Image 1: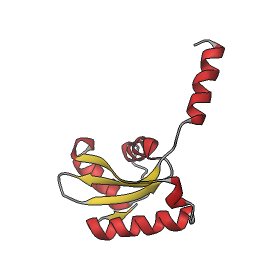
Image 2: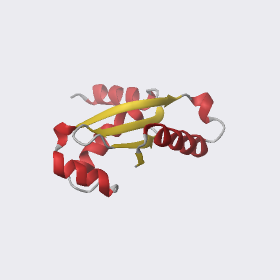
Image 3: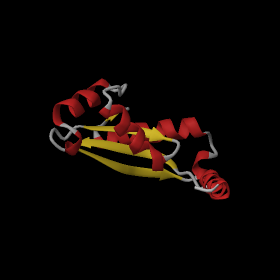
Image 4: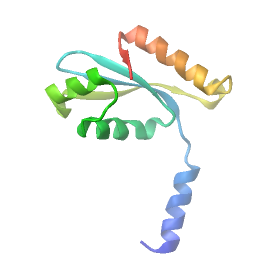
Length: 111
């Protein structure tokens, strides 16, 4: 890749719109689910799957289910996208409240 092309790709990446929100990881074999919050929903599945594949996910029950049933038994779902206007009232507070809501609604463990 030429230097100019690389600079253009990096600039486009930095300027992209990032959507924060809530996601769900579901084990299809056991019907267990785990909900989490992410500042960038477009990249979180990669991060979660990477840690699970390497046996280093911090949520022990999720890691145990992944180890027992394998990657093919898991599904990733984007539950809610939070727009910037909703996050103006305090990003951390809003994200924490929405995560608690979805954990209760879906009977999911928080990640």
